[in-house]
Image (cartoon, rainbow, N blue to C red; front, side):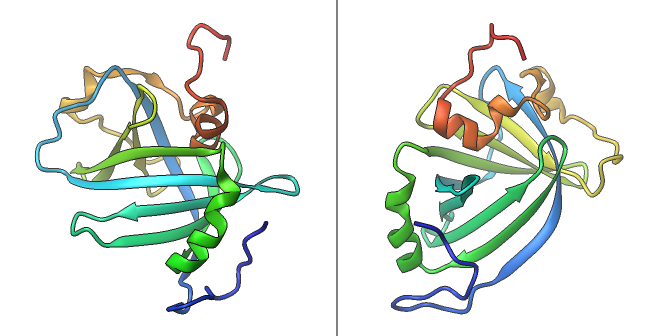
Length: 182
């Protein structure tokens, strides 16, 4: 079952907001969860729709700090540091109708959002596997990056170019074997 890019349908549907942009993101594997204090927290469930050539996109349900729910359908192209991302807001009905098609390709995580040095760091603590990743979106691929002092000592290594740590791969294959050749 695919997910069309038209306006969201179903009961209570609103016009879909669609955004398309280049995503420049660096990702780091952490030894544990840093102390992020009173960071904004989002609870995220996401699943991947099988498509004709692999992935038909990602469905995401985010529980915001005020308890409200936000639903998105996202498609990404490319690998590594720079990727194209196309995302649209969908209704709960559209999400619920598509969610069943993601069985066996899901992850859950709590995202902690921490501003530092003019950038927004997102620390993802996975609730269905022992994994913590830090990611930061940059304005360009050449933008200098300062690692926050509260994070520096917890970084095992950068995994931006290691496809095994992409959410889709985690959802399908689970936690990577660190002893495997990259």
